[in-house]
Length: 545
Image (tube, rainbow, N blue to C red):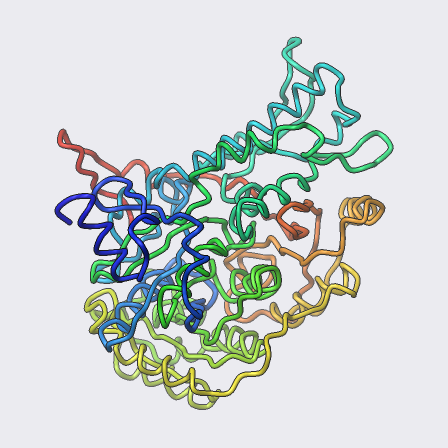
């Protein structure tokens, strides 16, 4: 783009928006005012992209989402992307950024991956203002909150295991108590922002946040501290979706960034609805595999917003299937059809889960052109034919939209299939245990669930306060269908252990902590941060895509 104005004019024209709604943030980024939602047309078709269980080989869900949108555009369709914002935790940790890869990327990548338009900073500040006000009230004895029963945690957008369990208020600087940090994407403020329909809905959600309990086990709410308007002031600009574009010029609303293993894992409702209001097709994604992000997309995001996907795309790679089939990472470049076939039960589990929601399914084989063989690809195609689902090979990394035309045409064709009215996996009139058991058995393939004594005690506390009539956000490892990250493929006969609960009453769900999952990730032995470089002109290199 030549300057701010040209970017705004071009994006406004593509989206059919009045320019006054598009607020420039530099030369190549913008925000779109929420009021733009009120003046647009009948929504388009929503395509949800998910994947098989992640492996170190990579699956490329975001890359395929971007490539599919570019493929739709290349075939003459009006399309828009609705994606999550990257967290700097993975950027400097192990995974890297979240702007796609190769010819299927959104730009400007560096800016999106680092402090993108200040949204995460605003969410962090709003979260921590509430934490500071809670501790201040404890210090001045202006709250009935029991210091030992505070549940509201501080957050930061970085992986730091040292902050998982800390003590605050020492040496008279407040009330001494145990505390801990979560990562910003796991903040309930993030979830409230992502699920809110507008600023007034966000106000209601923040008011309803539970920050802890009294000595008599009565819930204490954020509204009791009188700072909701201050939090909303911090979030004033963050509530507006961000607008960028793909390398091939597909408009992309990138807004909100919770992780699907420890939070609900979807971009904001307003960004998705804005994309739907501006295009005939909107492509969105849900974090990690179908068992995590897509299940939460259906049972949390769709339930609260009235959204429903019209089609589902499940991303698979030959390399990931080989790893699920037992191949060592060092041997992934060696052709091995039998290993691919051994890994297919993992893909099958996700296909069967997706079918429960009654939407047409397309398996997208994300091509690694240098190593994938025709025989290996044929094994996946034959399997999909046996399962009765569509399959398309997409060279999105190497060829962008041109390499996704087959996938785009297959997905559009699948939208002609009749679909039943959308129904979530479970209703809310059953018990919490029954809701979790339904998810564990129907989606994960578990034989049952088990609650620790700590979890049972917390559940009783929540039930006493009427805080359990909510969808369940299962927080578990992304590396397995089970809660044991070492169990790859399609494990059977396992039990999901729920060790504790966290209440996200403002956001509107109940978090069940399974296995050893932590809501503050840790850095690996050699963090990705050690490979990043910046030169004298400010050019950044070494950042993973």
